[in-house]
Image (cartoon, rainbow, N blue to C red; front, side, top):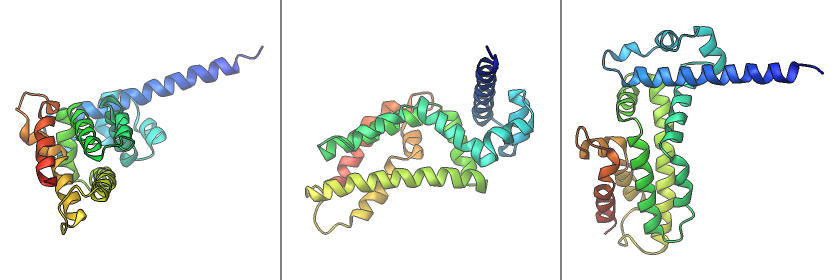
Length: 202
């Protein structure tokens, strides 16, 4: 009997473990205080105790690593629940669920989130990753606002795109981070954000 399947399985486990270590190291570096220039592939490799070649093999580039970090944050932050917002029949309830889901997501690693958002303004590679994800949030809001418009929720004469633009700001990390207490959970201000969103719709 060939041992090859076992060996391949063992090697895959080692690759998966190495990948987890790299992502954890990247998140840890993002959460640490210090220079924004400190977040480099070299620094992540050193912290994860792997070679740079390993990182490039697994993630291809710094952008790929950042995408993996964002995916890990999304998984830990329960972003899979977002799908329910688009299947909830009541569009207002759907929007509340959308806000609550992002409240949980932004809260999963406040320090890393804050640093990622700040880095996005300084580093084009980080900026591209964050911008693409912000665009997805905007697209989701556009769908939900479209459903509200169909039901005549916002006042007539208001451009739906103006509503989307305001809601995009209200559901951002920066809004949750600014409203929450410095040492408090961001999820604690979900109701505040919901109230602001509903005020916009009124």
